[in-house]
Image (cartoon, rainbow, N blue to C red):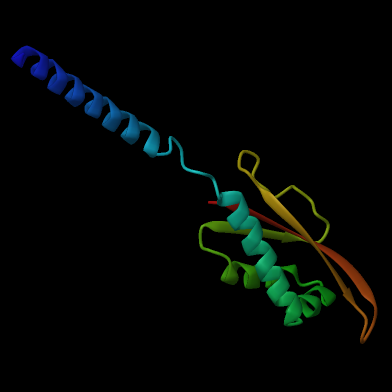
Length: 126
C-alpha cells in the first residue's frame, strides 16, 4: 500500500517537472523578430513628410541641394541609420552587402516656377 503511494507521488513529480520544462522551452521565442526594415523605412518616410509639410523639401530640391536634404534627414532619423540622398536614384554609393531600404519621394513646385523632382532616400543600419 505504501509502495503505491510512493509510485503515485513519483509520477506526479515527474509529470510536473516535464510540464515545467515544456512550458519554459516553448514560452521563450527562439529568435528575435526583425523590425529593422520597418523602423528604417518608417523613419525615412516620416522625416521626408515632415520636411515636405514644412516646405523645406521643396525649397531644398528647387535649388538642387541634396546635401541639405541629407543633413536634415540625418538629424531626424535614429543614429544607427545611415542615409544617402540622390535625385537620379543611382546605386553607386550604396553598400553592396547590407540591406538597403529605399524610399522614392516625388516633389512638385508651382508657385514661382514649375518643377518636378524625384528624390531617392536610401537607408541602412550601420
